[in-house]
Image (cartoon, rainbow, N blue to C red; front, side, top):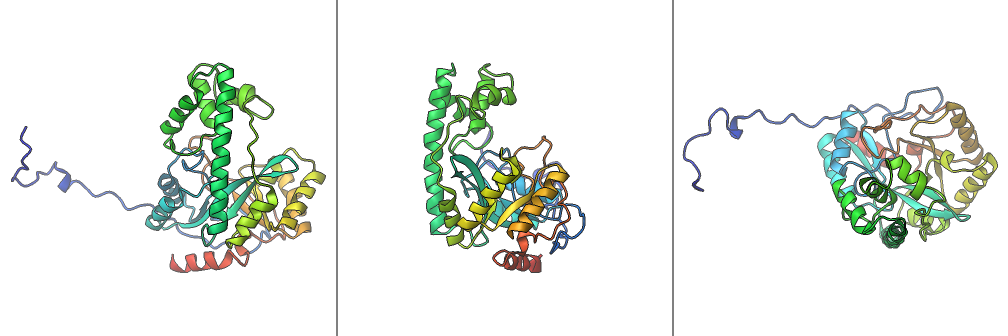
Length: 334
């Protein structure tokens, strides 16, 4: 076949005459409530989602496109200990008419327990958080090698390579490996029936693969967030195995460290427990955030899918003095 381009004009079947792609979906923004004063549907915002920059199943741009198709116009990308997906997500957000608040989810230690903090960063990551994220990256690398060594003792040969292959298949092969990567490797090798079985017998809490990384203390990570102009949010406080009294102690220590908000709604949760959490946040003077904690398509969660916030006097986190100007400016340009 000749590699010389034809001089003939394109036919009706040629790409030059194909219909152009439809423009990207652009959600219509709704006003954000200033208070959760009545039982309302979830507002037009989702401040907790993950992409392939950590352990999510969609590339940042794909996630933003899905957010737009679902009619959510304000979002935060909060990958685990990483903001590597923010630039790609920002470009897609501009194309789709979505307001993207930069963020990440940090793993920290509190009384020898792993806790997650969402960092909402209207000015992006500065020197403090960037240095902290490099520290987190190194901790995750060391942790993945230890998990691999333990999985090999359980019979998963070449565990690091197998987990890396699984991460690559999911579109995120260049990040530190996480437990879901090893779980998929166990399933592929026939050492677990499915992901749930892999976590139940090998990787979940208290199992051989449950390696505790050297995460920073909560106070240190909150300091990174505040130093760079962000707001520290306690992620899904109802998921930790804590009594109400212990949860109160966690939130008080968080406030003492400089934390200012907690996720009142994270995905789907019991409305009575959410009301009880709202009472705690009100008593402590915290702001309330909402997020789906979306990771993978096809599951019960989707961007913007979460339980309705309960009626409460607790102010929404988007009313926080460091976040309100960001959302006001973004709304003005929509």
